Length: 55
Ligand SMILES: [Zn+2]
Image (tube, rainbow, N blue to C red; front, side, top):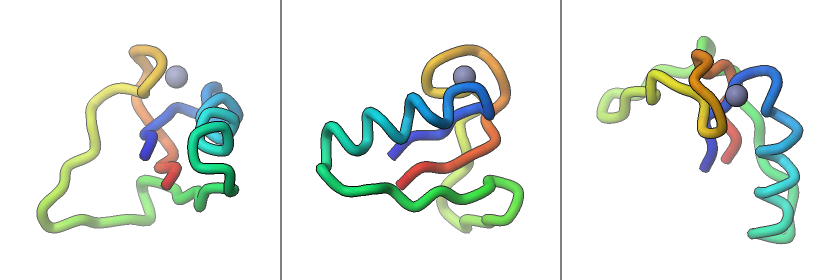
């Protein structure tokens, strides 16, 4: 699972496909609410605020 900014969405998808050999589901973080999970404050790859959840 990756939480990434707009810039790193493609990178996260590439890594996901490498690791799991299947395409991920991409969700907008703003569309999702979790009761027991809070999105990290930063992108997985940089210090920007994350926009997408790649799972
Ligand atoms: Zn990033």
